Image: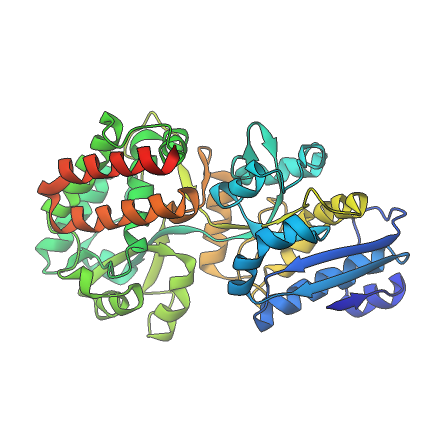
Length: 417
């Protein structure tokens, strides 16, 4: 545990941090539990505690940092028996068990503050039963990272819709390459493909209802998603034997130019750059529209703060949540020297990094359909495992679709009951 208490002048000067949140009279102790145990995230968490403490000199802040894997196993126990005032967690379905159990506080009152208009992209991910249960502090984009030099060689442009995506793919295959590298040895990578194809075919709301168990896997909308997926499979869009590779092991195919693109989160950029793909060779585009009648939605896994229902200092906790989402704070904690991800606040700024800038613009202004968290965060763990195993099987044996969907429907009836 680390305790933070100090004077405003000393800490603000040492941090070089402009204060735009009005200081208010808070006292007592604010207990924060965090899973940011790795060095850079831990420094971010300690920095936030210090700056918030500087704003409120009569408030003592006790920060307890727990290893992330241990945190996952301990969270239900400490929320039940020894609740802190603020706790890290994740959005959407990952927070649902604690909302349903009455362990997270309704913070809709906090979201009524005008500052939260600048966090509209994630409001849906923080909402259950029409109420908000936490606030976001960081996320990152998913999308298609592609070899710009190969596209230039073949005279291709970024696709505006699925038809153009398939046309590009046909030209790439004709040149002797594959369109997409993929490592599906770990099933979760197929979840990204399902997320985008389903959200582009049926929309974010449909996708959310499916992962919540409100739509049958045998529904015609789901079948249309798989029909669109099969078009890519049948034309040979994906590398051979992708079940033999992890996502990291699939990267050499794009580095060598044997594949032209990868659908992945922004975490893929660093290893691709390290392998020699500079920004003249690597570029990014938003997964294109399939059904023009649905708004574009994105996968953007979001990390969050919550107030446990058993918190003792809820007034200070609510003030901390407002501080977390402030534009200046989110700019600072997400910069390249800290988390190296994206601020959720649309008024924040991002580092001078090509992919962070493109992702921020996309999520802030071109994802009107909303933000999903990724399949294995949006669906319960048992359902996610069963479904992603089915996705991998479909990619290898697409003729098994009816059996796969019937199996997933049976699993859903068991898991969601």
